[in-house]
Length: 518
Image 1 (cartoon, helix red, strand yellow):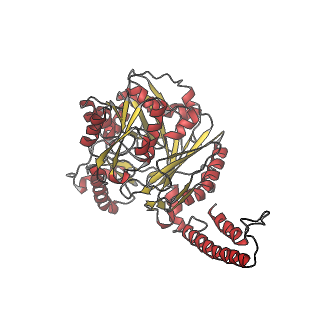
Image 2: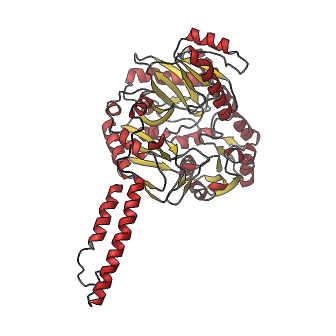
Image 3: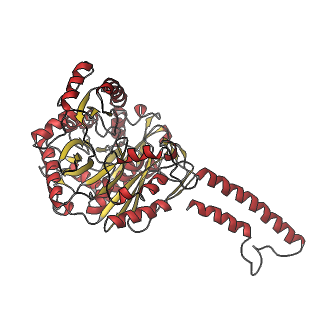
């Protein structure tokens, strides 16, 4: 394996390029028109244009990605996450073209990509699943039949897209009279997002936690589960904060959960990186939820507490190497890590996307801080793709230290020109329920409803910018007038005086206004 094409963009493309550089492997980036000058394009050794801005004209074009690999002489493809990462047709096309697909087999992607097939695989492996339907409910299944199934499962229930992910095609139904409209909405969203309207039903647990287990599996039969990740802080079924280890999982439960995850992976002959997700009930019972057949967004926190480069191991497994990691070591975390997904969204306006140009950027650093980003000052955040601009990770010797470092990093992080979720995270990391880890998967949605749109930012960033500009104009004018008067009086200016006095008071005032930004 000498050259890898990265079939993705943004921070994950940058992350993969860095892993390849460490391994002295050449890289090829692909891009759409609006990403022509993007960071991942400039970092790669080569870059190939795919097409127009919409994903359907660029990053989702299997034929163009394969052609780009052939054109540049790449012998492998890394899909990252999102776009084509869990597309069995893409994995098959890579194999047919003689390219190494850095991920699981097409057959494993197909099997575990179907939520109902994955549930059956878990049951066959002896792993408990949440009560629900075992077969897909296609569009031709009548409402009356679905209502009968829902009654047998018991309300509240979850309607989920069979081909789903990321909270798309998902609805919560608490009463029978809500079912038909919720089914129609879920089907519509599933069709738009995945091209498949099939759904299934699942009982909704009251207040579960979302726990997941990272896996690596080589081509020689070794399956290696890692220490669990806690992913219960979610907004509309999408993760926003992740941490490891889970603050409520002890050694005995960890052993049971990770063993169950490994059993599911072994039962389907899984290879490369993947993640088994579970729901954890108050009584310590856990249930298989789904499998993600790719690298996860939150993989850095696992890397921080284990010292394992997961992307490099994906590459090593794909070229046939055996796993040589100590199974006990990757289940015994060194410290604690937490991650925030920094989005170009305005949290004070219902988390509406905030695309645009980043006019200035100050990235946090210091002990225990890692920022995985695909952007920089002067770059544009386009409207066509997921608005996540970076992942901020904090590591500490224990959970309190990791949280303290994250608080500090969030206050250092400054993004200008667009709105971001940084004020929301700054608020979140001071909430008592988060500090005591007394949360569940519905916690954040409940809190946001109770806040009724109260702003997260202590100071409106737009008003701060206006104040800075006004202060600069006003005090620059005063300084110019002062210089003019000094020249008429034959006095040297502060800039040329042998022993200049303090800067004009105007600049001190401006500095105080600038201090609002920190």
